[in-house]
Image (cartoon, rainbow, N blue to C red; front, side, top):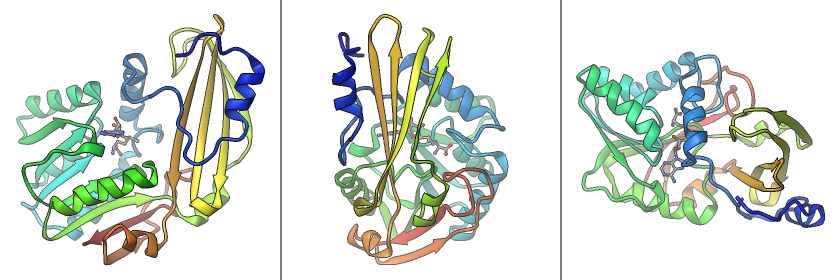
Length: 278
Ligand SMILES: C[S@@+](CC[C@H](N)C(=O)[O-])C[C@H]1O[C@@H](n2cnc3c(N)ncnc32)[C@H](O)[C@@H]1O
């Protein structure tokens, strides 16, 4: 939160023409109020904004089951409230989930304990993973690998390669070049009394950008409050070519589209699932 920023020229300079990979000023995932709202969004089966629909999750689980047989060991990076880890444990896999949202992990742990399942949950930032075990499959679902900037992709891919057993698979999904046609690179606004970003009233200015040379898209949200303070959230994402994935050190690449049938670029049939091996 930055005070004294309701200086329109300064805000225009800051937000009109962001460059790859300008960061926002604020982080959504760990904000206590937002994380509460986010958990509700994760758990709402009718909203595909933080986790996908039960049907999409089931399609993804079926794909995972076709890749590795139980009781394979699976690590879910960015597991959120454990919608996948829970199901995988029920189906006989040895599962670990990592997330840095305490609120999501608390929900996942409580559900695990109530249902007496064996799942390991670790609170870590996956950009600096500390693992003492190797896995048959490491997954990152909901276009989260592409949400990393390229330097972070290299770091995370390297940690994943070190943490895979021989023959192990890294499974991630990502938007594709075809998804760009479903995005609106326009500006829109909304006013909320007690909205997703804050219990205080705010005006939200949203803008989406495409950086074709970087294969990157940016969702930018500028939040203006009545007291003159503002917040700036930026979410980057990427689409990948086979060569880019090879450059990250993965040589065996299987790409599958058509698995999802939800709405919008992060949930429809154009989203690609990459099962890759070093
Ligand atoms: C879009 S949600 C997807 C959650 C889950 N994969 C699913 O599809 O239901 C992204 C998740 O990644 C977590 N996350 C984002 N950045 C992270 C980081 N650097 N380290 C650990 N977790 C992170 C967030 O807290 C959130 O739970």
